[in-house]
Length: 470
Image 1 (cartoon, helix red, strand yellow):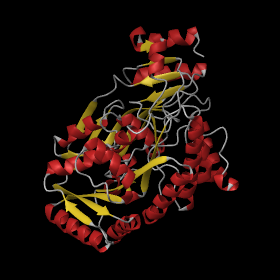
Image 2 (cartoon, rainbow, N blue to C red):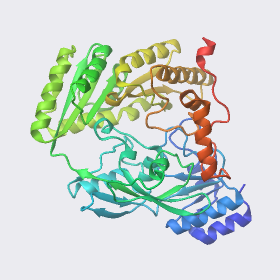
Image 3 (cartoon, rainbow, N blue to C red):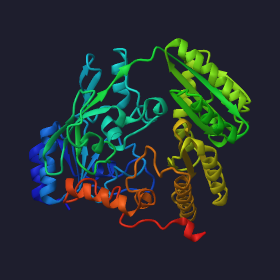
Image 4 (tube, rainbow, N blue to C red):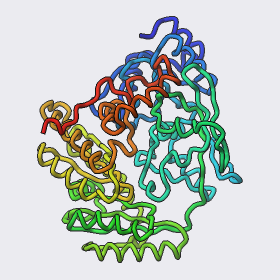
């Protein structure tokens, strides 16, 4: 509960203009993109600089007020839903590119910067920031860092953490720390930069980030491959990698996804095949030509029924846009859309997709599966209605079985969306009790009063393994 004393202290830091506890404003920030999670914060606060963030955290720590750092609210694991009340921290003022350093190939930004704005700004200078989450048109860099976001280019280029080389962060007691630097090598002390990346706002507030850039690839080519057999598509993925070819993008869409995406995008996607692979390679022209030709041969050997290389950049862009629109397309099917991201070794993709289909049939649900085949990150996405409580119970049981199957196949419960509150009950399945205990010890050291995004990552109670009920 926000006391009047704490409220006046916060207003004195940010001014009345940047503090709101009106019901309307609190309602706007009471949820994120995760279905079935909503809770009103006590107030919404918009700092203008790092010093104000520090002062805000000192007040919250003193009064034991929960604080939830928030970007654009595209989170898919209830990680930015203020389920314990407290303060939602907005970064609408802290949204600038502070420096593009072409000598050191870095860019320094504030957390509220939109991801696509960063990508466009550095590309104007012939530089490249590879992480490209599907939400990049609206997601923020701070949110990407807190969740360690991935994207379509993750197979070749890695994820957000691979590009974060320095941070400025405010700890729960208000201390301001700087980690890393514009360095190719730095092993001075614990790697606090990597610890903060993916910590989901549970350890501190990121107020500035220095990101690594690379030269812009010279060229790129895109191809779409059709299959009548899921296993053949999965074998193609493994064989491409086994031939020491690492495509920039290697995406998978199953038939239910193809149908809804084509209905949505109208770009001529096939709807009479079991699956497609969307494959892209970039780099020097001669390398791209050689790799695309070899990939085409591999796919044909693995019983692809069609291999089509995009003739123009416009055609290639349409294919990429269609893949990024998969969630929006599925969302048209029902009032509620639940997008998950179970991840397995790429060699197990066929088994995982088969299991998802069997689980879908078992619980009589509508689940479309698409995702990053090259790194085994699949997105089973359920179109449902949260008002139908009986169906939602089936949905929950289905996803529990999907997570369990992913772990059984050597995978994990989340590849890029994070744990948040939604997946917290399943985390022990992956990490075991000892792993959870080690993480809790780190959390306690940073945040003894548990004010940083409380209720996230660590569940009050772990789910029982569904296998016990079979």
